[in-house]
Image (tube, rainbow, N blue to C red; front, side, top):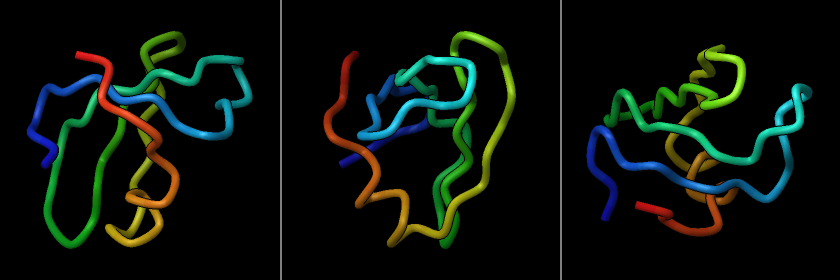
Amino acid sequence: MYNIGDIVRTKKPHPCGSKEWEVTRIGVDFKLKCLKCGKTVILPREKALKAITKKVV
């Protein structure tokens, strides 16, 4: 499904305006890094899978 290093797009943008994220950790939680500003976010798996719309790369 998703692998570390994948670039994904989310439904809602980050406050900086970017919708593209890099997956940096997968497990019970997903760790996503914003490609525009570099901030990281940790989301529970269930919430992350709902937020992600598609894999870009």
